[in-house]
Structures are given as structure tokens and as C-alpha cells.
Image (cartoon, rainbow, N blue to C red; front, side, top):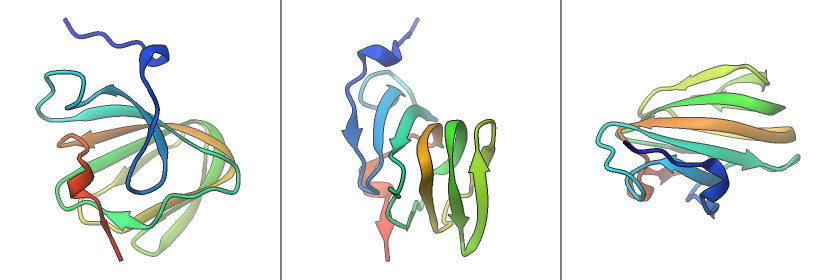
Length: 117
């Protein structure tokens, strides 16, 4: 059985500039088809616009507000919102107020599957 406590996971910065704590991913569990992490972005911060060739992502906003952009379409997002980011879609999230969200990637997140303009 694989169980990971969020409080025991060390934060790191991804290639897109968000700070995450991996709950279950290739670095800490025998996962094959997905990964789960908590991401945080301070008010006024944003990820760098990017896309993933392989990974489809779900974001689930735990707290805060921001603007989500996917392939040029923007929408305000906040606590309780679930967001689908298809593989191959350009995307970026900007924090209006401190954002904290879960990020699920399938297949699991990899730095080498993150591409920029």
C-alpha cells in the first residue's frame, strides 16, 4: 500500500514556474499511469505558458482565485473549480489571490514533457 502525507513532501519548482509538492508520482511511488501533486502560486504570480505532448491534466482549485488560459480562451477560476487541460493544449494559470490546487497528470508529470513558446 502506498500512502504519502502532504506534510512530508518537499516542495520544488517545475519547469513552468509553479511550486509543487508531489503526493504520488514517478519520484516517490510505483505509479504508471498518473501523478498527483499540490501546486501553489502566490498572488500576482503565474506559470509560464506551456504545453505537454503526452500528459492530460486536471487542476482542482482548493483555495484562491485566478485566471486560467487554455489555447487562448480565458476564464476566472476559484475554489471548487475543476479544470481539464487536454494533452497538446497551450495553457497558463495566473493567481489573483494565492492559489492552491491539485494537479493530476496522466501519464505522470515529467519535466521533459513540458514545452514552451
